[in-house]
Image 1 (cartoon, rainbow, N blue to C red):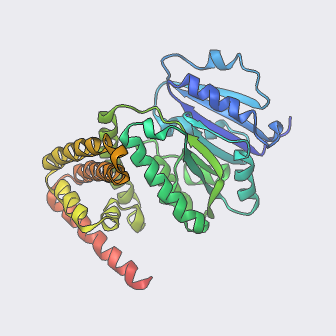
Image 2: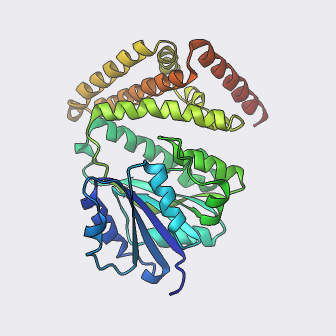
Length: 343
């Protein structure tokens, strides 16, 4: 049997139905079935997926790896290491993919790019999802709008395992996912691949459709906090990468929000109260968005502020003390100013 050109790696956990629908969609790819394989890694699902997947009759080669729950980074790493193809495509178990998905990733690699970020789109019915999901959709839409115009301007810190591809040899050469990171392991891998010389590209037509089933607000709040923690760890691992520094985000918001984010980093307990209050107000605005479109936009802005307040609480948590947090901010400010002067 010949070696496939692409390996699709999917880590899964307790999403058998969504996973099955994704595997069905991969049967409809315009790329010939013999040109790719699919590796599913079951990261300790309560109901193991292997027996169910064994009953499938897919057009492509399907391989299933089962492991005790160890987190997304470990699961994806396991999948990449058993993959056979020179190019690895990673997507999530809550995605759907149109027929041209894999062909578009292949086209970008054939053009000489070695780290390809795909387009994460939203499924119809987004308006009925929780406000925090629409906040996420807004961030993705801004990303797509910007880098559709400048596809070679993407950076390693923007890597997202919802839709990305890279050369397997490059992945192994830089050491793979950092399994100590419970969040942002994808962007940290992107930083190392870029530092190692990867050629980055945003492939707008390599689309996945996000069908996230998250519904718990407290889980979302906790994730936001932990992103601040782990992004701080990534910065300390790569201090020379200015846009990997979580303080980088402080310079991307308006002055009013900036003051509140600084307050959250300075007084985390106050930040926690403010983040909940901001989200509560945002939900109230969102409930009335049919009265005027501006209310919907204000609701998303409120959710964005809530996210930032939790994120910078996490940044402060990892700093360990207020003086250390201020020192980190001062160092980033100097680097930020230097980069603006030289750019």
